[in-house]
Amino acid sequence: MDEEVPDLGPLPVRMTVDADMVRRLVDEQFHEWSHLPVTPVPESGWDNWTFHLGESMSVRLPSAAEYALAVEKERRWLPELAPQLPLPIPSLCGSGVPGADYPYSWSIYGWLEGDRSSVDQIADEKQFAFDLACFVSALRAVDASDGPRPGVHNWFRGATLRTFDETTQRSLAELDGKLDVDLAAEIWTTALSSRWDGIEVWFHGDLAEGNLLMQNGRLAAVIDFGTCGVGDPSCDLAVAWTTLEASGRQAFRDHLGIDDTTWARGRGWALWKSLSRYAGALDDADASGAAVARRVLEGIFAEYTQSP
Image (cartoon, rainbow, N blue to C red; front, side, top):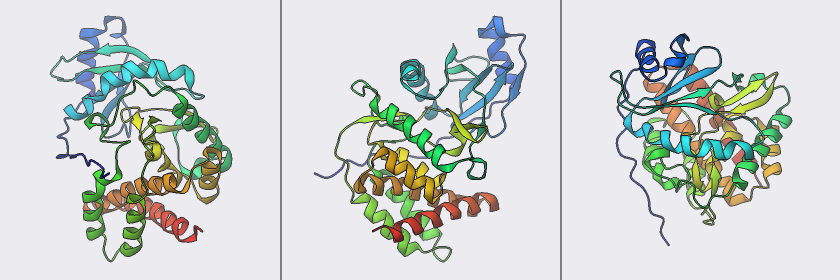
């Protein structure tokens, strides 16, 4: 049976949110916290603007209408997921509504301590891979029967990889001459041909460096569940290439017991993400972003060509 391929549609139009707007929202809706300072969080992400509220809370505001679709989902599911997971995840402190010239629902969460993960800060890669695999395994074990299926709310994470074929082909065309696009196309074709068995489980959807918090070189918390849902969990395997090196990647796969077809789809998610980032970084003259994306792509190419 052919897979139904969703239509991604145009990119969202993001709005800018500043500390003054957040200050007004908090003062209007949460008088008990009006004395707490509001300060921006550096590198707060694309889908949401994030601000410190005092020392122990964060304010999370969607940057576009499409991203606002995840707000109610997170409010509904994070309290249910939290006690079933081995690492801290955000805890809801307050539910905001539109106001102060801001048009969407927004939330206040408890602040989770830690620095965003990076390859060079991991103390023990195999331990990090084990901790991450334990988290993914526990998430997959949560009852998925009533969970949110893929859709616009999570940009079709958990759906077919073919959703991203058009953007991948465009990236390959833009990157011709800058990397081995023939090998990349072969890896992508292999991923598309590796079909999911249809068993729905929970996934996070964006296990990226900015959403994995570290303390003392170890994985300490997981944040940003805006792309979570139930469906094909292979999207959560992209982290094996985007964040882990070869030894950690293999340990991660071994601990989860991933079969070849699921691993191929996970590689495809990492390939799509990295090709898109590389092509976008070239357009923006972002040398550091291009270097990171190229490093990941080189890891994908090496692992694929060395696979039995």
